[in-house]
Image (cartoon, rainbow, N blue to C red; front, side):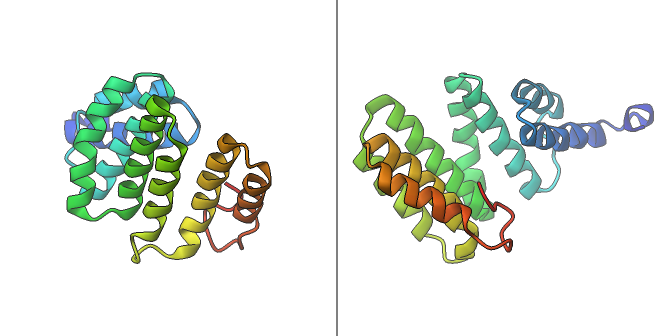
Length: 168
């Protein structure tokens, strides 16, 4: 319908929204295609930040690190300016994991992961608990500390249904 109305702004917004949905279903190529079609839609800043975040993550999943870095360079100051805590945390964690891929410094990775989850009091702890547990489980697994990895993984799966990320 929007294409029949010739409303380019609406079309851009729809492509941006569809990119977010595609990400939820692991359709990373489609995320990138829709992001290009959205042309940096001028919709609400909050939505635009999520669009950029899923584009960054999708490009990484596709192995396109340089393009992802350019998106992250735009995304990080933007989400800091609008105060979108979740995206700020995801940017910091993504950068930490990318750096870990280059230097394999588990201590530095663990420090960043712990700092990210302790820095923003505006985000309810329950929201981060699942995500933090999953991240720390990966760090411990890579360190060879399987007991701690299982503990963190188990704890992240035991949260009450009050969070939308139960069982991450």
